[in-house]
Image (cartoon, rainbow, N blue to C red; front, side, top):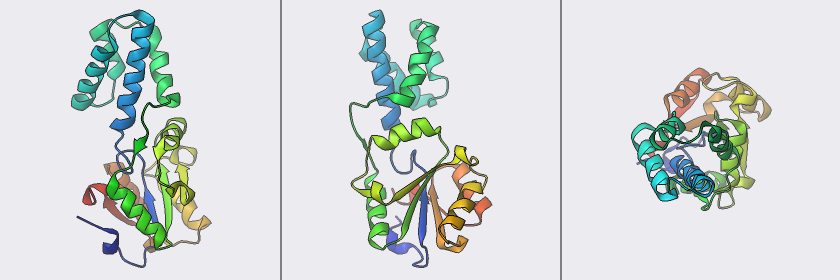
Length: 204
């Protein structure tokens, strides 16, 4: 398992994605599904919140979030008009529980800060949704040192534009940067930028 001490000491900046890199995205989505299930039970009476929440959890674990509303709609005959409420919750949900960082990533980030290196977050997700997640994440004080960039506002990864902007704005060169991600997009992003890449699984 990798640790901070394994990095080249010449690295000056560490770039993270948000979902499934800093915290598990399912912790956000399952709470969104729980809130929606409560809304449906309160509004329609059926299905019960517990039943619908359980369905969402199973569907997500087996197939992910893609078209999950449609699956629930078909299984429980949920009115199409509630799709708007479902989508809106992803942007505005106030979660019952704080989102918690992977403990290994928390330790890594703390060590980066103690060593006076720079922390960046570049996320490909919808800015409004990602901001809602960031606000409800327990950062343990790291938020003061983290600079956040929404790739959609410049150009989505794996295009290198957002990192090119960061390099120029912070007087960094490519060999001083490492990208930590979880997906093929993150790996392709690092390749297109010409910087080192590490998969977060190497720390977990």
